[in-house]
Length: 90
Image 1 (cartoon, rainbow, N blue to C red):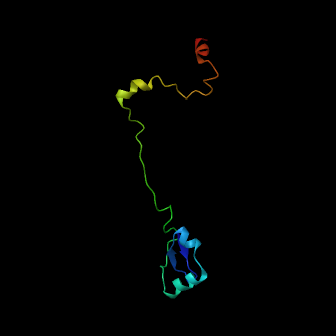
Image 2: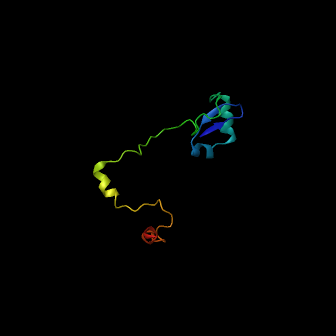
Image 3: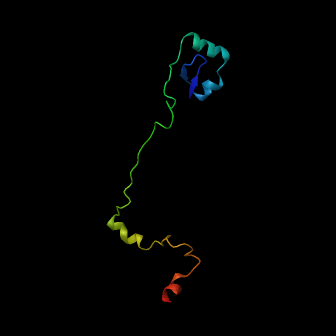
């Protein structure tokens, strides 16, 4: 995690190091001029870590196409309650 010291510099600490951090440790880090100034407020955030995944939904393996024919469709709402075969005859 990133922790900003009172002098404006930012240091990288683990959660354990942050929980054990004392005022003397902070004073020491400032006295040795440790850390960096960060201009970008999103530095190290999940916003920068974008990954794009692309899926090809149009691709169907023809060997598996026959096995997909027996899968019931979820396109019709309440199809488990209403018997559609009776309604199609009317």
